[in-house]
Length: 143
Image (cartoon, rainbow, N blue to C red; front, side, top):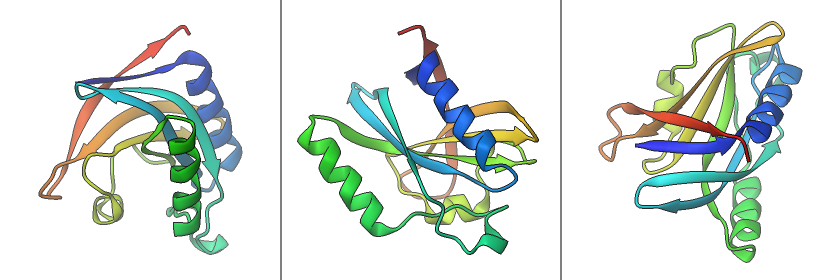
């Protein structure tokens, strides 16, 4: 399967995650999904609530952030498709922590950030049995 987002949204995501370096940053992916293909129409940055000393390798948001964004998306005819976050100085591959805290059917975009460069962007979805993630293709569009 292929998911897609615009070059502009990808640049905004990369800028945010580079600015968070050396800590992890992240946020929500909003859009529409049809026939297993997601179109990401908006990204919404969310503050990392982990204690500052842990933010270099952990990212989390509050349940209130989740509920608020899900309600806002519904009101605008959009769907909460998933989440994105960075892995500073690490590969864009889900960690065991990511697997344990992820939910099936959501998109997880992970960006590897090395100093000032977003060097790798990969898309993952957790299997229903929660055993592992499968990687998906990401199509970056002009519009």
